[in-house]
Length: 417
Ligand code: UD1
Image 1: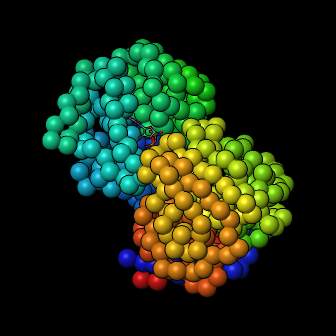
Image 2: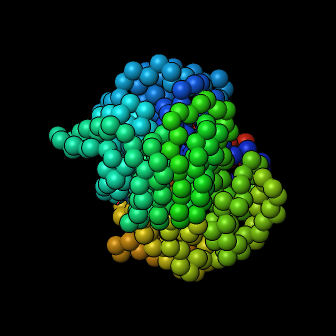
Image 3: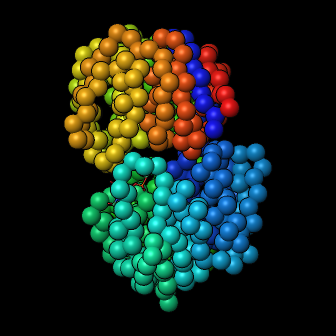
């Protein structure tokens, strides 16, 4: 297993062209299963989770090839309807295949999903919605067996605007019979990206980005060429890395309108921006101010995925910040490691109180999940001395070649085996 070795204290300054969004590419690759023709997906980040998704597609019988940042999926040879337990355990998002496979093959067999250990992460909303669409589901010995004569459109009211459940319903209903309405749907930009891709394949979906999504099922979907949206979480992580070190950052290929809550939080800390159409230029006025209260919320609220990198940022801000994590119950695993680096953080349940300290010190730390790992990178870039981060396999799930991008922005960072 590799480690990232970072010597902190250098301002992170430069230009970064932001990678394609992990959380958009995974459901879009799952959606290719619904097509009767080849699909060409551009701007796919080179990530472990994308490679695993390609393996899921190949396991179903699809032909998959990568040419640079383009993944080409030919699903015409689909011959399977199950996903191996190994792949299901490695990646939570493999559960989004359920809706697509059952709509395409009338049956599906998967095991309970795994993924980053950030909470219980049940899939009850996914299964209830699929049942409402006419899928018979048996849960037995850790496996989920699905069968349907046809997907029947229905009104589905989600108790919580789950991103994955919304995607699963869209995938199942796009090729079903009749009209499906999702009420209290997730409104994340990645859902809009999925709607655009499905419509490019001939689906009839509207309303993504609002709380109500309408899906008129169609009999078949054709191939499409599609560009994955930029990764707003990766973009925010690089802004945090630059802000904590007092650098000047220019992000290209970003979608600022998808990042309003994130940019607002940074502005409240005293950060300034010049915003262009697909560009963000960030200037820092030090010292950074604290964030009095940061509460993670479904979109358009502050994203849970950027909570931990922003907590790293607040460790060096003036004053006290309070973070409340409302989405995942176990998303403070980075706190012990930040404290090891000299941060002053107290956790009580889902709340964390962060008192700004004058400096962080390099230490040996462990990434225990994806975004918590990114928080350690942000902290290490600002810390005095050398930080060694192990558990990099988590960081690699979501950040394409993180050391390459940071090196280009003057970081002293190295990957060692
Ligand atoms: C997606 C993102 C993840 C992000 C999260 C919230 C992908 C691949 N992952 O994850 O990066 O942090 O959205 O923005 O897109 N829940 C249930 N029952 C369910 C489903 C969810 O109780 O059936 C709960 C979860 O435990 C959690 C909350 O709902 O507390 C949010 O989960 P959800 O929106 O489904 O997140 P994911 O789709 O797993």
